[in-house]
Image 1 (cartoon, helix red, strand yellow):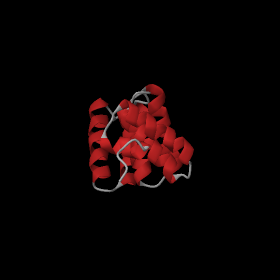
Image 2 (cartoon, rainbow, N blue to C red):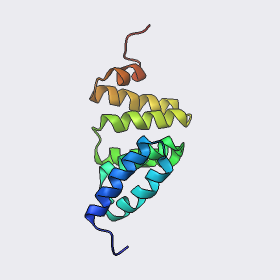
Image 3 (cartoon, rainbow, N blue to C red):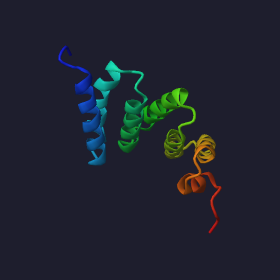
Length: 122
């Protein structure tokens, strides 16, 4: 689209955030597709699209996006955690555990530690 410019992509990104927050992940994905087409290196847009895919229960596309984010940002604890949740829902517990542990090692948030099995046992 000739009328698309960087400001439009920022607006689309922000609107996609709002759509995801309003539980319209498919609408968010549609907006993010154009942003990512124009800026394929934009990790924030890819991470948001991965979250939208996950929220829409499109687990394979979510997994691929989270993996792409982690190729670029291997120390992104949230991406490891979200990929682990995706793998868990996809029935891949061994791979999920690996990413839960990486998330916890990178950022010792209570929810990461608990998911990794490092938290206090109740």
